[in-house]
Image (tube, rainbow, N blue to C red):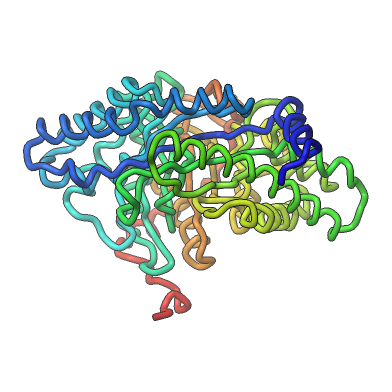
Length: 454
């Protein structure tokens, strides 16, 4: 039973500590839309999305009003479009027409993002998947709400280095195509290893082929709540620290479970998962890096940061998994630079560099996220960064990802402003030594020995 003390405590979390449900994401299968006629395919996709999601935004707003819980975003994830468009799309421009249809459908139902302009190429690329990947720069430049992701590796298959090489080029072309908006297109593009197919968070969300026809996934967030809880145990031992994070994660996840079940019931759509990731925002106090500082680190990036993040991630999962019937997605702690004010401060103070961020991704929820780099960074260097991050994911059997933004026309020492939840970021230096010959080898890095478990 929930008592009045817990009700008051949750209210305080919402009113004073930035607790929110970051997103309700409806996953929609488009497998039944497949058609060899491009016009018919686009019509089917538009009709399926606008029919399934017609009440999504209103339902989220109603739940938010009735329960007093902020639900920041309402989103849609769809079956990877490389699978859906393969029969109809003969050129990259054909795929772009689907991106525009997705954007139109997203605007019609009122969601802020639609994810799934995606290809899963961890072992190899079909002609359709390569066409979709090559269409990404144009698709993201000519749409507003479409998000794209490409999975280039997994623990089971290894790393597709041909796809890694191509994605380095695509990231740079996406930056160039959206340079008038400070290369904003790259903020809507994620390169994954071990991508989860039930992730409600953008830009990496897509609806996996093993999922039901339509589901509801919820992503909760509460770094401010965790920080406030840790203030009360300042100076205490690690056991007390862990117990406090675990208990707080439990309470935060219960809020997400409540919203997920309510949305599922009202929309007559099965409940999928709750993703209990701590996702920061530019708001003061809503920061993962400030949690590190509360643990005793002067700045994110100081010695001990990776250990602090490992502790945080593990306790969030342990607390959250007991509070929900189904935990999934990424679940842990995000470390995006532009979306976390204290992370930005750490970069500006010289406490945090790209290599330290990479080390932190070994134990965090996802990977190198929302990092602005110089616009003259070579495509092969971006490919090298993607390969490094994919290797961490592959060997450690975890999801890793890269969302870097080469800001065309800007260099180290300058700042880029994205606005809203995406925040702003200092341009971070990148190792300038060449990896060209390594990336040019092509082929596939084999899966690690421990992947063979049949």
